[in-house]
Image (cartoon, rainbow, N blue to C red):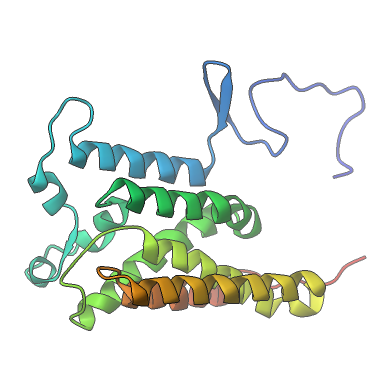
Amino acid sequence: QGGRRRGARVKRGTISAQGIKSLRIGNTRIPLTATNLIIATNVFVYALTKGIFGIGESRSRLNALMKVNSLVARGQVYRLFTSLFCHGSVSHIAINSFSLYNMGPSAERTLGRGRYLFVYFASGVLANMFTYAASASPYSLGASGSTFGLIGAFGMHFYRNKDVLGAQAQAGLESVKRTVMINLFYGMSSPGIDNGAHVGGLVAGALWVYLLAPRLVPSR
């Protein structure tokens, strides 16, 4: 702001107003944000493991990536990370993609791309480590721990900066509280949902923001 040169021109169609490159598909431009790239990767892995692209469904491909506690104990710790990209059904990936699409862009702008990616993936891995250490959910997959990490990150961001953000922080904290309560209630009332990973991701996201994200200070 305030640093533009008079008469400077920007070629349209190459970058957005925030300097984010985009990919053109037909008449539609899709911003190449970290959020969109994560969603695209999730969809690609789902298609790969569910038999789209003419490959044919193979349970072995999904089994090779999802978190299996007994195999993690044997040294296959990569599963704590690769399981974040796996989903078991269309509704599963749709819910997680919708949640990420709603929260991701704001989190990316608030934290910056590097911190955002770290919080997202580190929260998911820590959530999986928590359920593994607790011997809960011997088989699990999905990005819920990561998305809950973003919820925890927002909660900590608003809490730490409530003196600067004022009413915005209060509204944000209320939104975070409602989101957590609704999701935990849904998780407890639905079989097969790993609430332990949700809580672990929530705590991890708040912890990462407390340790890594800068605090806001008032300025004129």
